[in-house]
Structures are given as C-alpha cells and as structure tokens.
Length: 302
Image 1 (cartoon, rainbow, N blue to C red):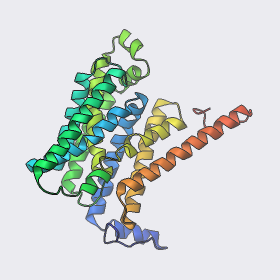
Image 2 (tube, rainbow, N blue to C red):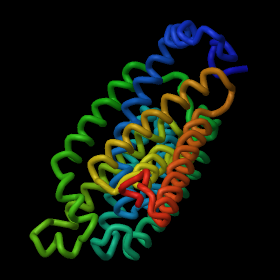
Image 3 (cartoon, helix red, strand yellow):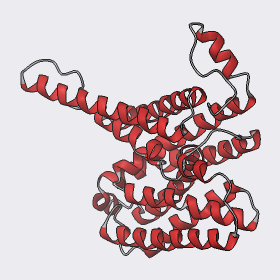
Image 4 (cartoon, rainbow, N blue to C red):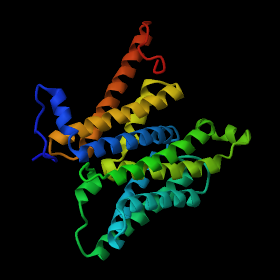
C-alpha cells in the first residue's frame, strides 16, 4: 500500500492528481517542511563540501539517532532531541579538535571520538527505554507522515536563524574556507568562524534528518552542493544552484513517496544522485569539447 490514502499511480489528468495530493493537510505540511529543509541544507551543505567537512556532517547526522532516542526516553519533543544533540555534538567537535583547520587531522580525530561516544549513548537510551522506539524506519530513512504545522513553524524559525547568521558571516567564511592561512593573516577570526559554522551545520543536519532520516541526510547535505560545484566554479551561482537542486529533489521525492510505498529518503537520494551523475557527465563532456577546440557547454567546468 502507498504511504498515503491517495492514488497509487498518476492519471492523465496531472492537475487533478496534484489537487488531490494537496488536499491532504499532511502533504501540504510535508511540502512546506521539505522546502524549508532543502533551502537550509543546500546553503549550509555548499559550504560544508567546500570546506571538506563531510565527515563532520556525517557525524552530526548520525547524532540525530541518539537525540531522538533520548527524547523518546525522557518524553520530550523529538525536534528538541534532534537539535539539542546535533548542536551539542558540533560544539564538542569544535572544542576537542587540536587545530582550526576545517577537515584537518585534529578535527577528524575529534569527530570520530564524538561519533563513537554518542552512538553508544543512543544504544544505551534504547536499552533504558525498555520498549520499542516509535517509527525506527522513519527515524533512519525518513518519512513525511505526521508532520504538523507546529513542526513546520519550528523548522522555519531555525532556518531563518541559520540563514541569517550564514548571510552575515558568509563572505568571511568563504575567504576562510578557500585559504584559511591568508584569511587569518588578514585578521579574519578563522577559528571562531569554524566553530560558528559547525553549530550551523549541526542545526541544518538536525533539520534535514527529520525529512530524509538520520542515515540519508547526506542526500540533501552533500549531493546538491557537490552537483552545483561540478556545474560552475562561480561561488554565488553555485550556491544558488545547490539550493535549487535540493528543493527540486526534495519535492520530487515527496511526490514519488506519495504514490509509491517506499521510504522518502530513498527517493530523495536517488533523484539527488541522478542529478550528480548528470552533472559529472556534463562536466566530462565539456572537458572533451574543450580539448577538441569546441565551445564548452560549462564555462566553470571547462
């Protein structure tokens, strides 16, 4: 059976299909939440890929599991568990690393320590709960069922805060990401920026995990950003493209998950991976055309 009470396949009347799908309040909330999460994940994920901090992003996404387990154990909101643990883990990584280099050896070691400890805590919380965690499949692989209007408001509030901070420090963060030594020599507070970015990354992964699930959060945090950076080398254009790709794959995933009984995270990951492969093929084709002396299709890739 499909995940909703809607039709199991498209009809020739696509307008009627969309109207029927959006007649369900949970689908309206899902599309709203998906849009919010996709925009934040696309923007923060772009800097994460640029700064080579995908391991930190992966760890923060895995922290969503113990966060949800702890929230279930003490009877608090799952959203608070997600955000609380992800932000705390980001601060722990920033405090334990030995250097200020993004993606450096010190950060990698601290990230691995935090990941191992918090995953162990997650299993402990499950054992202490002495029951079955509600919706383990949705927790790991994502679901759009049961998203409430209050959850959408929380996601939107966090998204506005994250994007506002990112906009304020975006120019300096870009400078520090491309050449941290020169940025530090110019007076940029590289370590502070790195810590603030890890906190933003924690908040963004906590949001994305509520849509894609803890195991597939990279579908929105990495693939759209990596795809955009394959297509163009211009920072502004690449950042906007990352957000647009994330929004497209999220809404396409929601659309597919409404009609077919498979996890939302699978569809989002599949569409995002297909976009990445297409961008990689386009870049390779542009390189071939450039070597042959023909006009390249992608200026940045060429």
